[in-house]
Image (cartoon, rainbow, N blue to C red; front, side, top):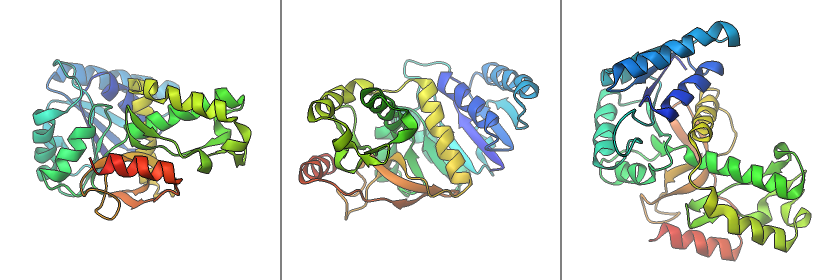
Length: 282
């Protein structure tokens, strides 16, 4: 990508800018916050680390929202001030509308854990296309579940493959029949008691911390840039044939430079299908 704009220079926004620069995902990264000196200070810190870590991205700070013009991707993160640091509610919706007007082509990624409603309102109230506005925090939750499952199974997290669907914190669904550990079905490797124990812990994994959220957003943007076929978990508005039109839930998707390319309909047991249908039709 040529340019990524991060709206918010809070803990999440700063961590995301650092990860994007280190991964060389974009040649230019702009951190935007009304506290311009904070945004500029974080950008300077990241630039000064570049000779040590060997990345070459141009990182700048600004207080001007119009920097989103021409960007390949726009990320809503967290502000440095305010009672609710993550962009959300009416202020978040107004911001989505402004940046969508300024840049009608870029995908808008909501990186925060508290922005599920913002994605839903953006699609339902602001008329945003569901492929263009979505949230990356679901991938952070999936990563946490992978790590916890690896501990339970006594293996490396790289050996665990699973998806997460539903809506946190109380309707987090892991289709264990489709999950794999070391190339074997997870329900073969794990006992029924282990699966029940893992399911019982899922609500306590929400919300992920800012570093995990930053990693999730950075991975999504990196995959989108290379048009990867990796399945990622995102908060996305579902189409009418999946659930109530516009209802946002965690679902596996593929992404490209313009946003969500395809929703990957998972194979679910009868129990999981009923649980997901309940979430999508509320």
